[in-house]
Image (cartoon, rainbow, N blue to C red; front, side, top):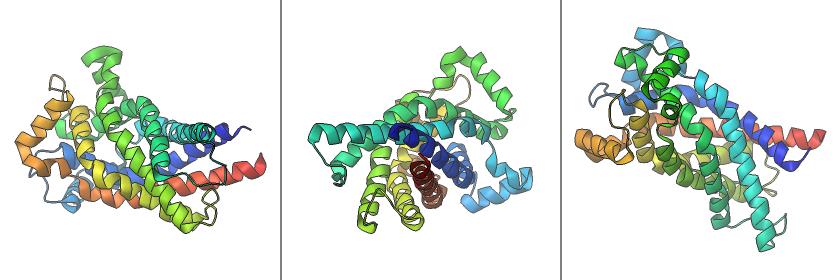
Length: 284
């Protein structure tokens, strides 16, 4: 089995780990970002309200859409990273056992945001539409959301928010992989073979590195993808709308659940990925 195929399969496992741990936090973040200002006092108030209305499993609203695509998206992330790393090492003559510089890591990370967004944007659109359907008085089932989007604009409607997703994910992935790889270099004798605990810590730091600064870009993406039919869906229209409603603080709504999610979800992602890759290396 080739190294790139191993990266793809291990990345798929990592993506499922990220989703299982992180989706409830994501549901809270999305609904805080898409609800009118003042609807909820804080994240806890939102969770309590949701639990009363829809039960404990409501935090997994919209999980079906990312479940079908998130494994592939993360598989593409890690495949793109490893392929770009191999190319950089070949071009710059960097030996396999030599650590990459932070700049090289960020270049590799940025490539993942470009390719991953092509699948992640439609998956997140369906997820956001399902998560916000109840607040709009609409049917939030997977089939109903798909039918509604298709009626709105045909196949093109499923790519709403593609630009915003890429604008968020390219710099976000630079920070994600940058923090992860630099933490591994600080903790591990061999960054290519971290222990489970080292992968958990480094993965959590990668998540914090990403979400600590991309939350404003994520707020714009959420507004675009949560829009009702007929509402503006342009990037700058979303920026102006958030600014007009809530000012600068509107870009940071949902930052609490985003940061609470960042460490455990990404710790699970990277640890699952590293364990899967280690197992594949032993078998093949």
